[in-house]
Amino acid sequence: MDIACGSGRDAVWLAMQGYEVDGLDVLPDALERASDLAHRHGSSSTPGRRMCASSRRFQ
Image 1 (cartoon, helix red, strand yellow):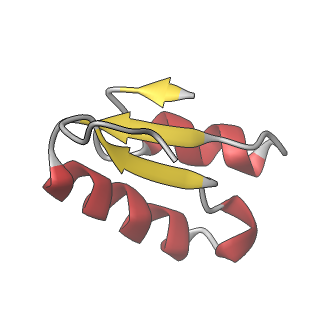
Image 2: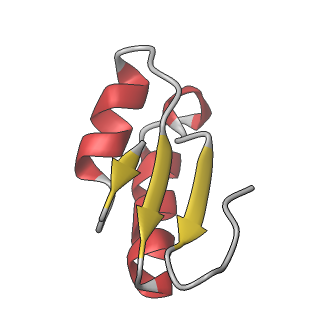
């Protein structure tokens, strides 16, 4: 789990190394940037789940 994942640089790098990564951040815009970065690096590097930290449950 990448807590405070921001723009997703570390999460995407870990996913590219073969890890299943969940990204968590308080800013929905940061999660959108992380998703965009993951898609630019191909679907195989997309972090598994992204979650806004202001939500009450992690699914």
